[in-house]
Image (cartoon, rainbow, N blue to C red; front, side, top):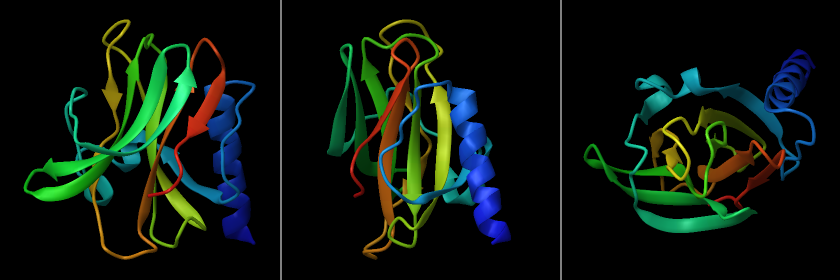
Length: 156
């Protein structure tokens, strides 16, 4: 019960941080919501370039000329997955990647990371090693600052 309350509070804090009108796809509970949970090698994540591209396995049209994509590719000698927001972005648009090891019942939110290099620039999450386990999955999510909306890809 204590864990559920903590997760609920974390999800509420994230929603308040992102602003009103937030709607996140999915029915699972949020396990964590901080960029610090996956930067600088934490939890096995690797920092990558905001221009990194790989094989796109999931995507969602955010509207307003922007999309969020879930990529995988070789990073630092291992196959890893990451989220990317691109298109007609504006500073303050957000991207993050959710990572689960229990098929989406709980997950760690890697991010959010804000577009900060000017209009039209891409932004990525940190990258995480992939796995052949069917319960080990990723999804990419984004939030548009000017539209006040959140969308996520399906789990991969």
